[in-house]
Amino acid sequence: MNNVNEQPDSLDPWAFLRTHTAARIAQGRAGNSLPTRALLDFQLDHARARDAVHATLDTNALLAALTQHKLDVLRLQSRATDRPTYLKRPDLGRQLSAESYAQLHERDQEATLVIVVTDGLSATAVQNHALSVVGGLAAGAKRRGWSLAPVCVVEQGRVAIGDAIGNAFGAALLVVLIGERPGLSSPDSLGAYLTYQPRPGLTDASRNCVSNIRPEGLPAGVAVDKLLWLLDEMHTRRLSGVGLKDEMPTHTPLHTSSPDVSAQIPETPD
Image (cartoon, rainbow, N blue to C red; front, top):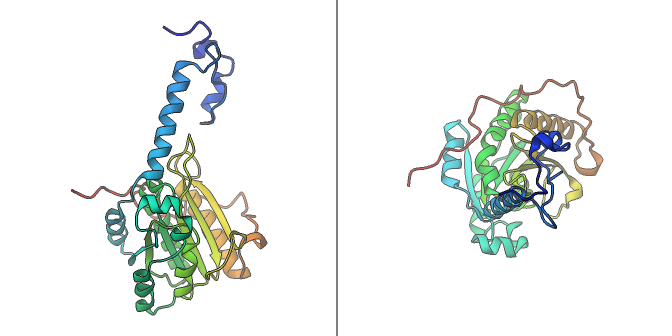
């Protein structure tokens, strides 16, 4: 039985606000606590956020999906050899393993654009949303005549790991797609970090960020349009980070950059 202080939505003057946001507003009260439904919803979202942090990226499925869309791929690894180490030692997630450095130098090729995909703090976000964004960026690079390096999928990586990869390819432009730290309403949020002339030692002041890429936030098609606009500006003005502001015109057509690719990576058979 509901607490006497709980009200059905039809009697709650704040209920209409909850239809416009996933934020926890107007939850009501039951005595000195939350109503039972609100408390259970909070516990469920908290569990989903924790699961996203500890989830493992199905790298084989992601690589197979990228290859299916005719993209050259390269599998790399950070110095964090497992998930517990990755969570406890952020510094190791910013550095490539010795074997991965060797793989990069064996390639001996240059590219205008490097796309790095790494699990970050939400492998769920990468698993669900990375393919559409990568496909749209690759198509946009092709239209612009930019050479594209192999899409580098890095296990247990952080944002800064892209700097060494981009530098190895002599890239002018770098995009790192990474699972963002889960929130209670967004366990699958994908972030994109853009850098002009990436190289080891750069700080976040040298990067631009587009965050909350997911259907409930910034849909993949809209995100790709914004990323390509920023990349064009970076390429033309030869800078990124605090010197480059997002002044994308609001009238710019959206949903025009992404090819028809699945937004979710299919599961591989056991």
